[in-house]
Length: 328
Ligand code: CP
Image (cartoon, rainbow, N blue to C red; front, side, top):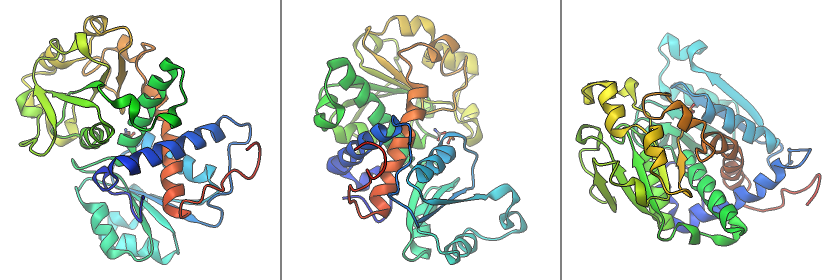
C-alpha cells in the first residue's frame, strides 16, 4: 500500500492512511512496554537531512528509527559542506554513497523530496516538510491523535474503527493556511478519512485557489465555534512572509486567535490541536495551549509511533513480525 516513498498523503488514499494509523497503534503499544525497542529494522541505516530548522520532526523520526533498531545518521546542514556551496544533488549522492536505506528530508523548496527520488536509486525518501507543499507525517500523526482521542471517548479500540470515527465530524483549520504545509496534509488526511473540513483565515492567508479541495472557507471563526469537533490551530509563518499578510499581530489574534474566550464557546467534547512550534499569545493563548483539550504534547508523543509505522512499512516490506522481545 505505502511506498516506496512517502512524499504526499495524496499518494496514500483512505486505505493507505488507515493502514499506517493501525500499524502505529501497534507501535504505540510497544512504546508502553519497559523495553521500547524492537529489532524490526536491525541492519538498516536511516539518514535525516534537514535544510530547515526542526525540533519535533527530526527528533521524532530519529527516535522512531532507533526504536526500530535502525542505525541513524544525522546531517547537520549548518556544519556540512552545504555551507561551502555543495548542491542538494551532490549532498544526497554523497549520503547515498554511504549505503543508506532511507533518507528523511526537510527542505524549504516544495518538491525537493520528489526531486530526490529522481536522483537516488534504491533509497526510500520521506518528506519531512517541503516548503509550502506538504508535511505528510504531521498529517498522519494529527489524524492518529484525534482518532485515538475520539476512540477513547467512545470506549472503543481505535485500530478497530478504521475511518469510522471521522464520518460526520466537523473540523476547522484556522490560521496561516496559505503558507502551511501542515494545512495541506491535514486537509488531505481528514478528507480521506471522511470528515467535513472548514478553512478559516483572512483572505490574504488563504491559498490563491482551493480548487480541488472539498472544503468550506470562511473568515468568521466565532461563527464556527458552537458546532465543531476539532479546531486545528496553525502558526503564522513569519519566515515565509506571513507578517506582510496581516495588518498587525493584534488584529490577527483578535479575529483568528484561539483565545480563552473562544475556547469557552466550544462544545465540551471539542478538541484543539497544534502542530507546533506554538507562538503563545498570537495564534493560541497560553492558557488554551495548556488546556487538557489541547492535544499538542500528545501529538508530539504520538509522532514517534506514527513515524515508526511509516519507516517500518517502507523499509520492512510490511511484514508485521516486529514483536520479538518483551511482550507480544
Ligand atoms: N510540527 C513540526 O514540523 O515541528 P518542527 O518544525 O519542530 O519539526
